[in-house]
Image (cartoon, rainbow, N blue to C red; front, side, top):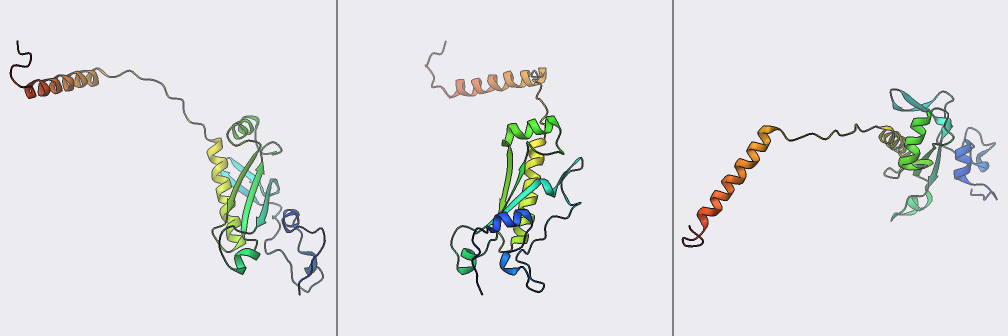
Length: 176
């Protein structure tokens, strides 16, 4: 039993948390295997930052590459995205840092598994890693001077190398 519903898009419906229209009214059947985000659920980026799932949008598409009917028909590839500009949990410095490194939207995708649920977990983990990496502040490098011992060792190594090359010369080549 396959029906086409005009104007219905799976990726839009999933983003809104709706089920497939042909399954509405069926006893206990929903078209969406993923549950809509739990109201209190959040993506933990690090101990000081948790992004609510309501700020993360996700889309399911078919995986690319070879495969049989399953790969061509199943919406198992998952792409999640986080809008930096409209986020309520980011501070101005965090927002500026992410915007500088990734732009207005941070994206992550996963298509390794045949399961959409597993790919969604992987994509969320990758998104958290990307955001954490984007927020990381690298310490500034302070230039240092070479130590007295390293200067002495460098000059001694040059003197020894010069002596080795001098001994390799044939007698009479510029001997004084």
